[in-house]
Length: 472
Image 1 (cartoon, rainbow, N blue to C red):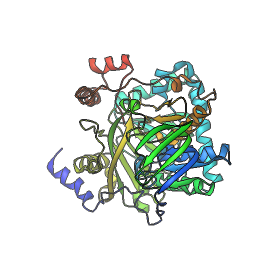
Image 2 (cartoon, rainbow, N blue to C red; image 1 turned 60 degrees about the vertical axis):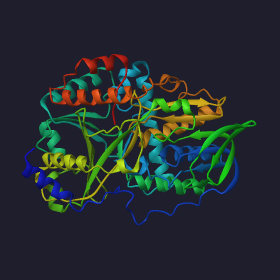
Image 3 (spheres, rainbow, N blue to C red; image 1 turned 45 degrees about the horizontal axis):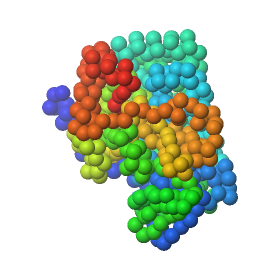
Image 4 (tube, helix red, strand yellow; image 1 turned 180 degrees about the vertical axis):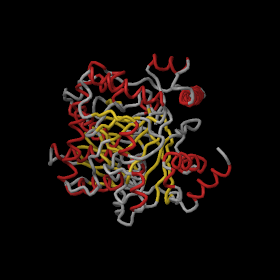
């Protein structure tokens, strides 16, 4: 990249605030008071992101008389749930290709359950008046290289043969650029109904309000410090109190699980995003985008991008950063070298937008697991349930995970708990230094594949055979 081009592109970052755009909102609600003293309840939910809030909400909707308490270590939605791109996908398997590879015998059922889950989210948005800018626009997976266009066409034909192409359209280069005008687009697959766009922070704040309205007792700035058996139930200690509960649901995702044996199944991956200033009518006309779909490109090191309600462009992805030891630290949320890289990629995709400024630049940790999609389980003789490992696709799938946890805690065999995806776990990550070495080699190999026509080297082919991977 020429220095002059780098200077021109990074100039657009000169006034970008290093805070998540979605959370930088004057309408942000005040946190609920911290827990002090002792509490008792039927169900304790640990974690105030999507996973925990959907669990609390669904628990009350299943049984309005159930006494539910939710603990959040900081403020609801401050972590991944308030920092993501706002892509709410029907997929429960981190995309159809991953699901078809891992659970081919269940893929039709998984697709049906995912579609039903997204429909239920849309109904909940209406039922609870969740003002989260929900738009069922779908998503286009775009090819930016010729080999990717061939792969998209072949994949579309495979989906048609398997009867899985309903609601999916293949777009050639002209059709893709007619939807969104970028000289880099060579083809696209438009999933018309399987993805909604939303404001992630407003969704989490709306879920909190809905939970409070149904009688859930929410305590913020209240980290759960440990989990122990207590008589016929469980006890969780907090800095200023304790909660005793008959059942516990853990929705802590990337943060250390209170069931220690679960921790080896996830590693933190840092993902980064930029948000532009609102586009003018002329700028918006220059890119088209009349149908407001979400977009993602087909490379291993991929970007995701979409329009906000006020016609800003969110541009994120590409770098997936893992730090030795799997540490989660606030200083990792800001990475200027990645912002500069993303800015260059943005203006390569949309050269007609040169001169647009970025107002926000931020990052955050994603809980990835070796199979890319969530896993589930119980502990303490079925009194504790957990779900984790959503690998960046949890905006929609966490609601399904909430229902899985509630089914497991009830001891019920349902169509959800009968799934192999629910009954089996991914392979855990090895300890250090093997985790860092393996992830670094995988990242290098993925970047090399992107620059060599998608050809996967021996390391990636071996990982494929073992069902292992690294993704954000």
